[in-house]
Length: 164
Image 1 (cartoon, rainbow, N blue to C red):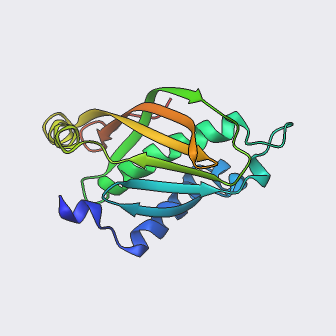
Image 2 (cartoon, one colour):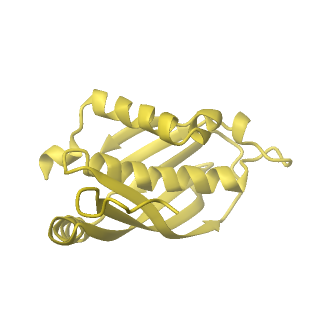
């Protein structure tokens, strides 16, 4: 699993290119891959294109950035696996306080046992689900907590699995 938590700089750039090509909204939001290590993936976006009528971050932008952080983490973890399709199945978002600064969403690495189960199910069944949590801070405190269930499909075994 060590190689799964040490992608090259080029792999991180490729993730950002994929986000911008596959999900055009990410370009308008200014989404950037900021950091990845054994603790998780962090995406950033400037406040200005994601602002609401109260001069704080738009809730939809916060939810989108959090979803993208979870999706992106799985892309990195699975980048050397067989081709997969990753989709969000279900999510919940708690908005605890306004975000009046540039956005930063960090998806925590799943617990080792959960990740191993996910990878084992993907290899055995060609499909697997995993719960991920994303935190968006503001002023040094938690502002948004996102929890999402993501599903990965092996494209060879499930060629018709498409995002809804």
